[in-house]
Length: 398
Image 1 (cartoon, helix red, strand yellow):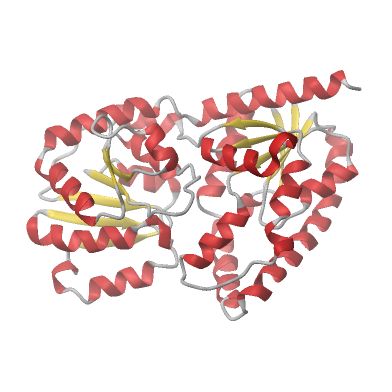
Image 2 (image 1 turned 60 degrees about the vertical axis):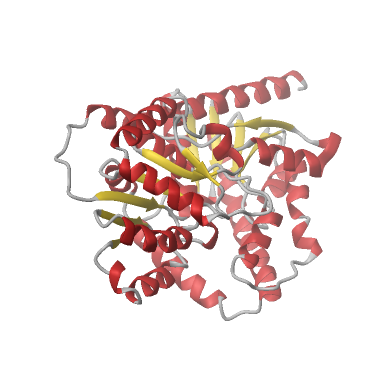
């Protein structure tokens, strides 16, 4: 099986990049010949480019910003078609796997230009993502109807679509109706090597403090600000605790300012900044309680990679009772699930786990065992089955 994997996330850093990288690596392990466009770039260069663009775009009115993004994406798409053309001519792939990107008409252009099966990798519904983007920043913005309807046009050009959650699958079906292509649900996962490392790690000396940890992008809806506010009470009630925040993002400065304004938090809250993926996984295994306090959104269709990585760390988890999280984790069995709109639930869950090492150990062991069901290798096998099915069906019609 030969495939061409077109994934813009190789030019980024973060969860999107990890997803694409792990899928590609594990497809190769399964014997798939895979070429990626674009190729991976140096992470330091990526971080500079992304930060520069964010600062530049903040000065542009939102309605104009959406059109600029559309134009930029599709200039890149047209330029990329040249690479795709030569790759198809030289490599002769059996199918093309495309990670759908915001306002990017690449799948439509490829469908019209080449007679090769197309499978779309859909991790977001962008018409919902843009609304969330502006609402979380308290910006009133009306997205042009032309741009908000592009998702549907792009989805319709595929032979099959694979998504990361059941909720996202339902969203696509509701938009496409009977014209929906084959939909395949493949949740995100975790490296099997990370699970093995945890099982083989040596017991380390217990520290004086119970370490509570948040890891991930510091976006508004990820809830790190909620955790910090609740921890202000925890720091007073349980002085032998520390809060570690791993990651970077738009809310980091606000979080740091909050800590600087409260003397009782200054030596109790640690900001590590963004760590490499390996360093993040290593850090998680040294924590005691891992928290994912996602805020309530209108439709929580995400498949958070951090949840699977938390599970693989073998530590006790507190997470919001939302979307796929509540499909995978069971309250009281392998995690404590909370209503993120009720701060007292998060406070009570933290106190419960701080006070009970036995409960932390039991929940951590249970979630660790469940993580073995959600490896990137398993995700890649499921995707390979889908690709083989689509290639067979298209060959039958030739």
